[in-house]
Length: 204
Image (tube, rainbow, N blue to C red; front, side, top):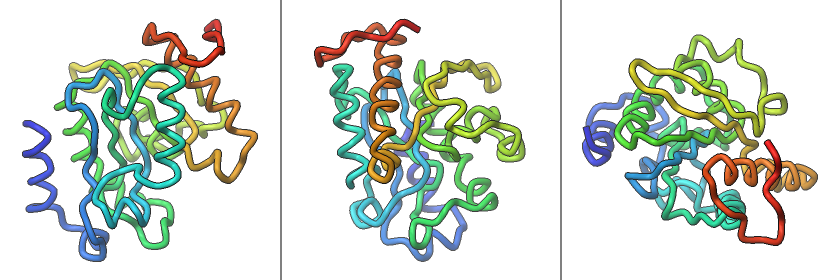
């Protein structure tokens, strides 16, 4: 099933109070043949208005981080755990994650990336639990897992997973910027990319 079909499925079939309250579906953006998928948490207000993920301040931070390893938003694909914005940008509920993530899984299987970079706790826990909501509580938090390469299997598929802090975290906690930059350099190393700044790739 292609991405267009999955998007149409959400519009036609999904039943969720978030859908009724939202302005737009925020499905995903980027290269449908990308080797790397970034998975965030949920749309914010600007994403809801435009129907595009990561168009606000966090998106600008992500764009800067990608440029440090020679990538642009055209080289990757970005999607969220939730396809519609939760009120006041609150955390997703377990029920909402259960409703929305089957479509995220279909997106990932359609793209067939080599690497999934999870942004923040919810996407990290869901992906590392093997795309299972019920296993999320057993997964450690992002502060323990960030920048550490993992391997997961889902049915006949295998993925490399790199957990990362959500780019918005740098806006609230500036000391995380250096941590995030270092983790992106690790991603560049895993992918065989050269950093565009004067920094040297970290040994890992």
